[in-house]
Length: 316
Image 1 (cartoon, rainbow, N blue to C red):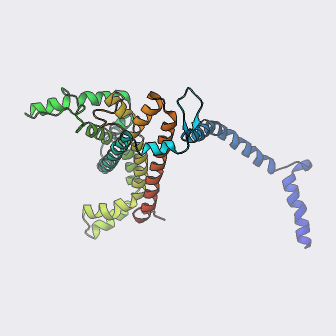
Image 2 (image 1 turned 180 degrees about the horizontal axis):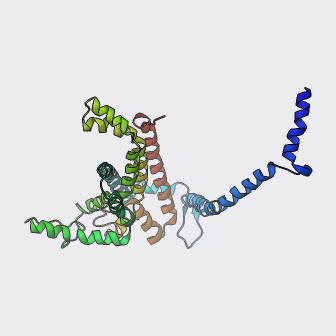
Image 3 (image 1 turned 30 degrees about the vertical axis):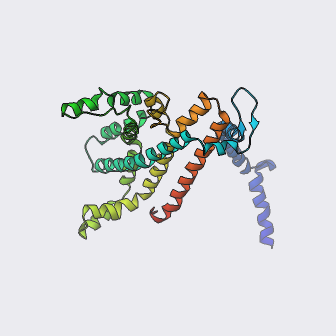
């Protein structure tokens, strides 16, 4: 008991410091203030996100055209969405685009990453060249270039004509218009490729050496070593590409001139949302569409997280 009594004043003196002033507590509070100061821009930025976020939630239950006061209509906007044939068409286009382009894009990105991981000379140059389309793929200039390449007299049809093949009207034919945008999305595989390459660099070589001694083939090594160890990278790229594809807008807008044509074959969901909100000024309906998109993305993200328990391997 006496020992504790003697130690208590010493501890108090350490905290108080000379002259009874706070010793160690002051630097701690100062560090906390510095931390909050650095976080201040983020908190300010959150205000520009949270306020529109909840405002759109309210507007989703109103009839609002930007010029008059919002009129509360309950679930009428959500009911009207499921009776809107163009909205259903936009969902169809977006789903086809996402579920076709994302797997192909990830497969191409992983293949190129494996090739680059073999230790090629000038790796930094190749990596930059392959990553460049990801920086420019969503820009208006690249989409316009893509429209020229796949035009009636574009490079693709000129090459096919040289081989004696009559190329279709890729951009203006409803049967092929969406396919050209899928090819454009696959072409912009640079971002997941760089992430795959970083993940492949982290796989220990001793696993491959042991597998080679046991006589495992290259394919068996890829299936039993590479894929399990980079499965968290695959999962991350899958989620990011999935979310990005559901929000596609620029490609469809530029390729179709903002109409979603031909015959609504490139009418992405975000493009139709833009038409409703900023062309037809049905802002309440557009807000409801935005929340439907949020729910769709959340559902597919949740499904992937649940399914990841069966195929994503985390090395502890």
